[in-house]
Length: 511
Ligand code: B12
Ligand code: SF4
Image (cartoon, rainbow, N blue to C red):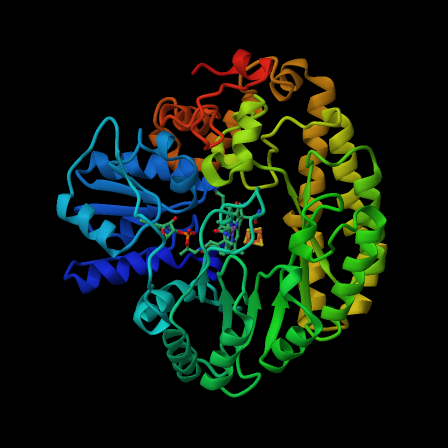
């Protein structure tokens, strides 16, 4: 992912602190930098933004800087999903973050150990600094992306849809200031001949006309390349025409499942093959106008049974060969989504180390309708199909000899495609051959297989020795316990105090 996909919030925190008169250094750490060179010493306070897959690295870095006298703060997806765990390793852990929260922390700037302070703003911030304000930090970050430079922008927060698996399903939709957006787009044209903008909106274009009116008022048609994640329900043909006119070059709609989540893809009650046909037609319509489309799927959902979901995805790939399929294994990221409470109540969450929670390296929900080896066989078979020479050839013919065509080839042949087949095959073989490995997946044992702990240590490299004791493990039921502790009864948020957990959960968690 590296510098092209750096988050907006660390740049925001940097702007806010600098505007308040502090000396700030921002580093987008891609794993290659020498942090001793990049950061001044001594440091008073270190803010770290991390996804869950980087949590263990973040914990180790916190220990490094705390040992040198700094106060540490964790924010970002991991802090939002696993605050209780992170509090053991940071002085402050923040959820929603606005300017007041940052000021409060910087004013206090005191160690809070062994248990960090958890601070959450009442809601998402009303405004965020635009590109012009963040430019100094964006420019330094993009220097690390020599070939393809993508400027991160955001036009909205939250989402009006309520997909129960999504972190934004309970966050009210909020359009950010359109005047800031317009100014930013004009500003970018002074910096690049043809800028490339990646929208970080959870669901781009909810207020479609307002957003497109703003783009059209700010810059000439098709003068900037845009990339956006959007739900299919927003990508109607008239909308696609308008997006094409304005330079949208890549769209990443979520399909997720053939048997669930119809509202998001506007396929109504269509499921199975009926949904495949409707969605393939829709994707082909988009591909007729937008050169790059990535379709996102989740594998291992509770509604999936037998080979059918996987076979339907293959049929879809045949029907819409131009789209690049991105497959995720069902992952329950702590407090991210209401649905996670259900998995926790059912006692089905497996505590794989955070390092593997990136939608691919581990599926941390005990699968409902498959044996693990059977499931991995399907996953491997489908990934092979998607990356086969035949499929790559069809994709290339559909994309033409273009940047999207080449990009798709590279993705299929890289760690994302063939690399994953190798990784999944290794897991599948261990599941068959190694009883303790299988027992961990089956929740019959809580002894973490050495395969996982060894890999965490080897990936952390020199930071491995700073990984705090116990940081390899976390409580996968922390969310449910915190809901119960807050008086939310069985953790379903209705506060009725009615404990309805099935037997499995009483065996596996202590409340
Ligand atoms: C845009 C986006 C992306 C973009 C940009 C990524 C980036 N670097 O930000 C792209 C497409 C590149 C991407 C990639 C991935 N993503 Co993504 N992505 C999102 C998305 C849709 C929006 C996030 C966003 O920017 N929101 C706007 C900001 C302003 O709001 P916010 O995130 O709520 O942040 C608030 C607080 O958390 C806090 N905050 C945030 N960061 C920081 C940092 C500091 C220092 C502080 C103090 C505070 C703070 O302040 C904000 C305001 O209140 C979310 C889903 C969602 N709907 O939120 C998933 C999400 C963040 N992604 C997710 C995942 C899993 C991934 C991938 C691993 C997927 C994959 N397999 O490739 C990769 C990993 C990328 C990486 N860098 O390692 C998960 C993360 C779960 C987790 N706990 O780790 C999410 C939550 C989706 C999900 N599955 O539920 N993603
Ligand atoms: S449409 Fe997308 S962003 Fe909105 S709630 Fe559903 S998954 Fe989340």
